[in-house]
Length: 270
View: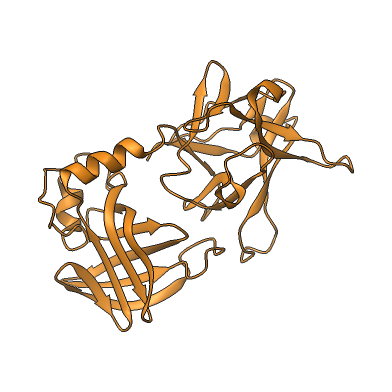
């Protein structure tokens, strides 16, 4: 994307933003200054992640909330959001919106995304983790990430699947045959055995006390299992009810005799 001034509106210019990117229809998420107001209450104000499609549709995410704006015509769009931090997708409709200056607005709804100044953009990018986010290869799971429960990146905390907390969840690094964490030195991922002999939980642990070493051939476009040398594989303890709220426990269980049956994950920087 060409450089924009600090006052340029990303949401209003989402089409320009995406069309200036060669290749894929979806532009890589980038830091922005966003606002999400629903029924008079502000859910996002300030730093967020923004990405757009070629048709001008876009998404913003910040903290526990995210919203989708889908352009349907000239200066017209429909929007939805997750409404509840425990929701697994943007299932709550926000109705029709029209573009108004820096924002898209509707009845009780305001969604804005503004470009950061070059200085603020550089600072935001420099503060971000340099790893990858891990997403399960499951239908409707594209906005979910593996992360520390309650965002507590410390020893003893278990890993869960929940709505992505970007950029905080882009912390996983694959190096030297092991899976480690960027910005959290000394922490690795271990399998904590269950007292009743069931599947073990994935937990954060000091690297010098961690027994399991995880490897995966997954990429942003090719999913694969996450395995240990001991024959354990990652899996999501997802309830059968597709409307069950997050978080879901992350487990380590014996890999299937047929590798095609093991749970698959995607590793991505964007």
